[in-house]
Length: 381
Image (cartoon, rainbow, N blue to C red; front, top):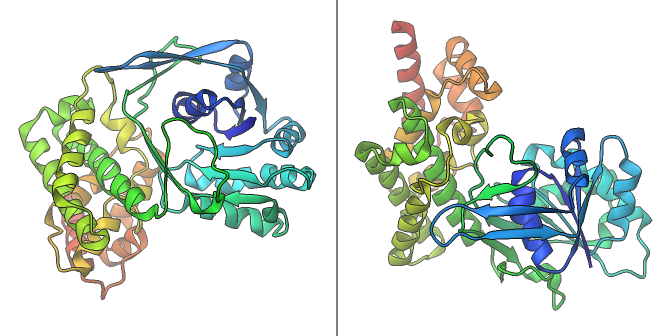
């Protein structure tokens, strides 16, 4: 069995690639970073270090890397003979990996089983998005594959200098995969669980893990904290993050019928993960790309708009939006752009453009108010 994984970064090596290796797949990484591809090919093994209670070291072997920028033909050949293709490249990059997958599918022997494709991104319906990009290029090529959406969860912080291709991660992980597209031919991925309906799982993860992580980062940045664990050690921040997650849990219960007691236990587990002092993670890393995180289907507006539509509380989520708007990191392109927009656009345009909310939506006025308040604050500085 062979798996091709696009994105040889920390998540690719420390999470998706690790589980594929443990499932017995020959592992091929595809990436555009020359130095990373060379570093991977210069090693025969790498170690995934689990930092925190119960963590162990896991050795990965039997892999290689190909450079999709300098050798797209080699990537296409690998895809043509693969059983599984996965990716962890970011939702905005899916359109750039689609041509390589199409090239591989067109070379694939018709005698082979359909290629199993799963996008492992922090986004709802990422595999559907990848399929759409593939079909734009060659609709018939997509007929040679089956596509399954997934929900992935593992914290992989910025890595210590000098670690080579080894990766430090948290011990906890979750990989939920919709089972329907595969029929009786499920991929062999130890630790993953296959579900009939992925939507509750992916929204539970996005609206708890991602909402909580980003809220901790933005509240932490406002308070001058550097590390996520330090931010959550601040009782005021812990209370505000907890309140935001109580609102997202209310949405998950109302929309998907998830049990409130189980959601409370899930929230507690998530917050304990963020508090892990052995996992050195920064508010700057978690807070980066605020424009994406403030968009309509993302971790703040996504649950808040559903809460507003169900007549539920949104005040804590809106407070997190206000903290995100104040995130100012000169090294992050989106943070710089957000601050530029705050200085040049009016609150009506900002609210509609950044969040995708319509003026008649029940959440619009509350979000508009935080944009207007931030602009007034900036004018007085």
